[in-house]
Image (cartoon, rainbow, N blue to C red; front, side):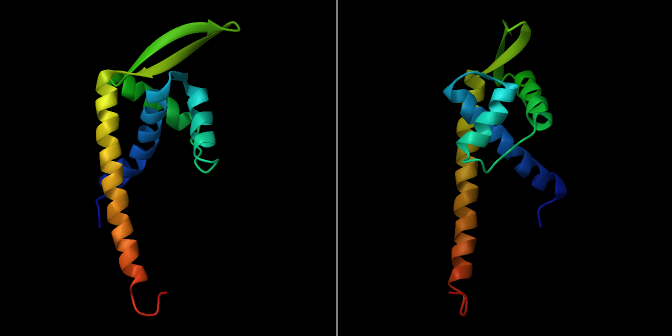
Length: 118
C-alpha cells in the first residue's frame, strides 16, 4: 500500500497536470482555468478556486509559470502562462500519467480474465 504522502502527491498531481496542459495551449487566469478544466473534461472534473489558486502560486514560485497582470473592467487580473521549465515538467508529468494509466489498465485487464468475471 502506498504511503499517505505518495497517495496525496498522486491526487494532487492531477490538477497540476491539467493546469499545465491547459496553460501550454494559452495563457489564462485562475477562474478561467477552473472553467476550462470543467468544460474540457466533459463536465466531469471540477476543482474549486481554493485548489487552483494555491497551485498556481506554487507553480509560479517553482518557476514553472510566469504571470502577466492587467486591468479588466476595473479589476486586476493575473494571467498565467507556461515557462520552458513548466513545459518540461508537463512533458514529464504526461509520461508519468501514461505510465500509471497503462499499469492500471494491466491490472484491470487481468481482473477481466479471472474465471467468472466476464
